[in-house]
Amino acid sequence: MKIAILDDYQDAVRSLECFRMLDGHEVKVFNSSTRGLGQLAIRLAPFDALVLIRERTTFPRALLAKLPNLKLLSQTGKVAGHIDVAAATEHGVAIAEGVGSPVAPAELTWALIMAASRKIVPYANNLKDGLWQTASINPELNGLGRVLKGRTLGIWGYGKIGHLIAGYAQAFGMQVMVWGSEKSRAAAVAEGLTAAPTREAFFEQADVVSVHLRLNDATRGIVKADDLARMKRDALFVNTSRAELVEEGALEAALRKGRPGYAALDVFTSEPLAADADILKIPTVLATPHLGYVERDSYELYFRAAFENVVNFANGTPTNILNTEAL
Image 1 (cartoon, rainbow, N blue to C red):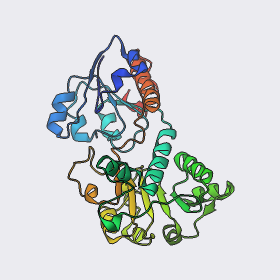
Image 2 (cartoon, one colour):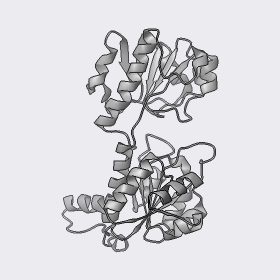
Image 3 (cartoon, rainbow, N blue to C red):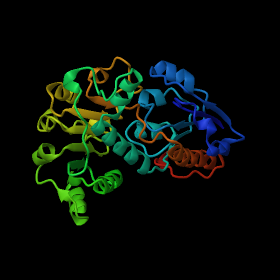
């Protein structure tokens, strides 16, 4: 089969042990993204199978219609709204789903919480410029960091990732408060945590808020400007899930008003994020380039499953097909 692996920004896939699973096939790895429909169609037209790195490229109906050779989309992890499944099925394109793990995104979330709370990044950057114990040359931003012990972590969405982060927080002596569905709140209470009595109390009482929700029609823009305005002036808002969970423009406006005081973000509405993006101009934001699952163990897990689905499909024994009608 002619196989393309898309959006491998770091040219990391070829270094994975599991890459050898594709020996015997014609494989092309693309290290840059293309956003234009016409450009994408030209780039991808020759291939029988495409391996997708999460949601880095979207596949709407218009693009799928321009790929007559395409037979398989092999997804790393689960499909999350970036593929028009109905259109793929109509065009005879099978979609194979993979597996994932909550460990890497949970660990990154905790790393961001710690780094933002102690102002590690600005301290480290200023030290290279000869500034000792200086978080900022702006006196208003040159305050002390703070420990997590004794403070309240608010988790919105108590799934696999939220569960891990709650454990980290308890190990650091934090109080954990959960908001979300009735099922999430009940699960938290059953495990000895606190369920926020109301949405308003959740945002008002938390020293750190971290959102861990799937993006769908019900959750898009679910975090509103009014929610953020309730947060403390020294509170931290963390988002390693999906940028679209927050109402468009609400976080930038809230940070400029000082409620919450800080944000730590790994996800953005447009990725790769432009260097002149508005959010990067706000000095109280710690931003990372969508690293939640971007580490070696996760890549080996994600790509091994995706490659196995490709090989099985090529051998006539397709596995983990989301839209079996396309076969």
